[in-house]
Image 1 (cartoon, rainbow, N blue to C red):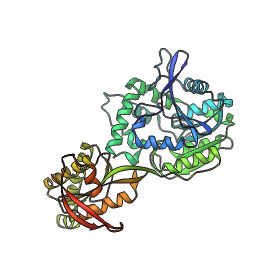
Image 2 (spheres, rainbow, N blue to C red):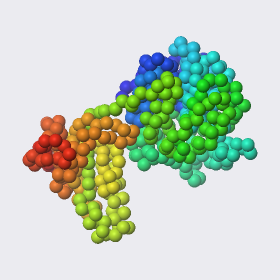
Image 3 (cartoon, helix red, strand yellow):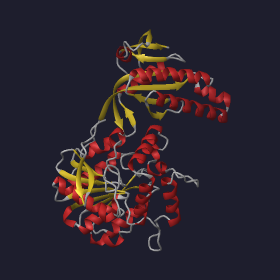
Image 4 (tube, helix red, strand yellow):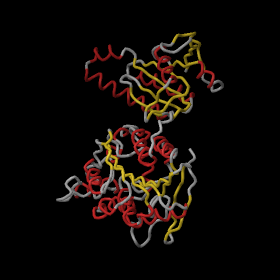
Length: 446
């Protein structure tokens, strides 16, 4: 997916990369944990959707600070919170923005706080989500992490030769997607392209050694502090402290665990940001796409579970789930969710969805079970990580009609893949529960 054009501005001889998205009435400068415009962002649907929503009411500005991502590496002097705030000013100057709204997440918090304290004329207002004044625990700051825990984290996630206890940084940053193989692959790939191990280490050390507590009572800009209560990486007490020390700050706690703002319940996050910055909150616009939906189901799963016992059934179900995930990934799909004894997946191509379904039938046979698969192509509404709409219901009903061990498709799918080499057998007209009319269904012949 093609993203916004990358621009550059020079600051002290370094090229600072930035992007501008949208044409809204306010200028919103985003400050993330280190890299903001890494090259794969626009290929990640969660972040892409999040930014599109922000850009409906703002001109969204993202940049890579010096030494990170698409910006020039620093030579001689290491990056600092102060230098990153100067990068932000250089980007604003290049675009012609006198005063911007700031949206900071995680490590971006100290940068935004420093900018608001040292250049108050450049900051109209602040939104601080999952931010902190410092990360290290202290006698008068008991909710920080112990220094030894932070040292372990830095070593585990930045040293490729590390042999100690591993740390799953994705499980901390986005627990709701920690088992999503596609997202995990993007996360790893993007991290590798963002920074070398040495640069990643310096970024983490910079983030964890920062202490901006003395600046908090100097901030005059209106401030919104957002925090998901279940965030275990940056705990909510950090935001309570910020809201207490920044004069007039508004604290809003949200449900959820994800540290990354662009996963989980993003409507709640964006609604709070939009209302604070513009004075009103627009209804979320349905994000509809045309896609191919695959539903699968283990035939007679209840009988198998009763006959095999809990432990054997659990092992069999785990084997099925691994097999299904492998096939979805093999054919370029995305597993949306498990349905308990089946899956829901989406594909850009109906041909690949059918081949995936056929492979799942073979894989299930090898496990000693049967699955039935239904495939339909239609519009769906994306709701966070889930999909909904009549297209999803039709696919589920097609699957319910399917014969065990077969892949059944709607007439829409059969027409779309004409000429692909896939053969079909006409299964006649069927009534689909809850769907008007009758539907001609076909079974794919392998």
